[in-house]
Image (cartoon, rainbow, N blue to C red; front, top):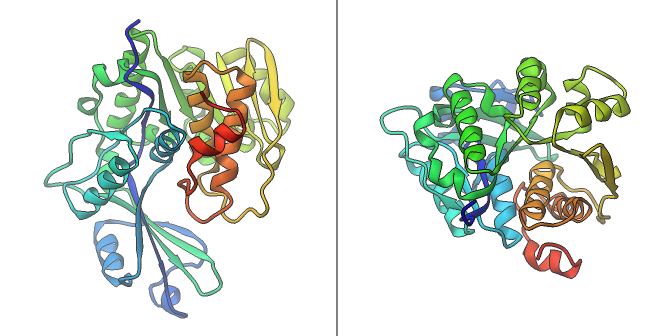
Length: 334
């Protein structure tokens, strides 16, 4: 096995989050339902973007990209693969990742869909109304998966949302193939209970066929995968199927299942949960980097929980504190 270039390489939907406050009546006038996520087309995306105030905040997002950002903040060598367009928001996405030290070299989509965006309108009472345009991120193909990048990563981590577009699904499988060809680990997150409902049989096949080595899920996703209301049953089943399973349990902490053994750690206390967005993404960052750096399961779980505790203490899915410094204070991630 050759020396690693990256600790963790992640693959997923490249989305720019655009957040802006709006005055009373805006949501209703635009025909939105407050507090709901709406999937929109290109024309609607351009129209709404043009109506956002100049005070809007733009930052690269997407589940797997958030995980890469977390790895970088922890002091790890991170890379991300995901598709943006050759447009201004594509510039925003690339600049954000590059500035925080994440390697990002995916070619831009030209003369096609726009860069994906999630436009989040904040009402005066703090309610979030989301309008998501997937655009270019669904144009990821096998041509964007490079053997040298995958082979140079200790672990390649992918999001379940990639299983929606047909070409991205092929890219997902090719990435796992390259990882195994270079004796590296392939991992994925179930992403969302509704995603599991759509692709349960295929996700189980990915795990049971050993296409995927490490599985990430929260309690709801794991129960959905095995169609049970009993967490104990779901844990016993994933223990049979996966080499490693990491399960987040919110305020109860997290557990890992490895070689038939269950290791659990408590959550790190936070003064107040401000925004749970990104908690699972940052947990994955800490856990994956811990394993890539040779930590024990217990220590990797603690690193994941620590990273998650930081991101839920403020608005936004990216860390605001230096996670490397924070983890060192707790004796984690060397």
